Image (cartoon, rainbow, N blue to C red; front, side, top):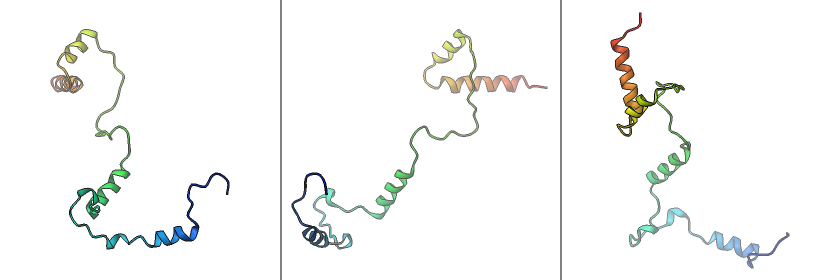
Length: 104
């Protein structure tokens, strides 16, 4: 085996030390330190679910479509001046216009 040795223990000593570790089900928590408490089944399951979630943007509702549209500067500034949610307000204004002006 190449490289420097990082462990002076022999294979037999390592195996004996590993076998001497008590099984997890035999662990008894005395309640003195919360950091030493073993994880409950619910906590373990929550960790597995968290690991399965994908990273990145959340999945959209599927009811909207992204488009590129050019809006006059003054109109865009008027909606943006209202603060966060300006895109939703713009969508609502367009929806109201469509209700008042139905297409034939």
